[in-house]
Length: 115
Image (tube, rainbow, N blue to C red; front, side):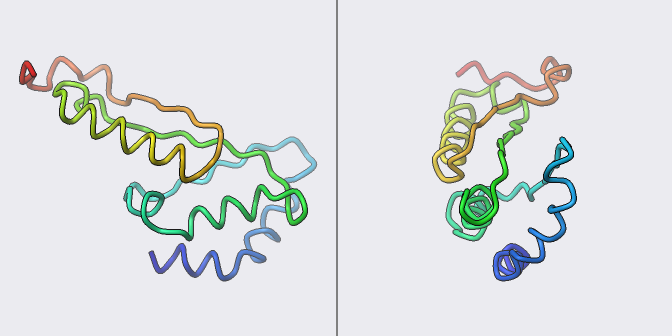
């Protein structure tokens, strides 16, 4: 959390780093940590996204990609929990959002509970 708070405080540095890529048709991928608390309960990531997408300040078109391991679909309780975390990310980040199931090729190796 400290790193995101520090980045939020120094958002002008991030804006300067992204400036050369703005008008050249580049795509920028920002890989955020996997801790759900950073975008469900903490304000820094939301504030950073808002600062980067506000037209008056610095306009970027961002999209969020949320990866969920396939083994969360083998149990109804895990699936509902993963769906709620994805929904929370969609609501809090206020970005176009894509949910992706990862490790689908390994789904047969996960133990099914039958619930």
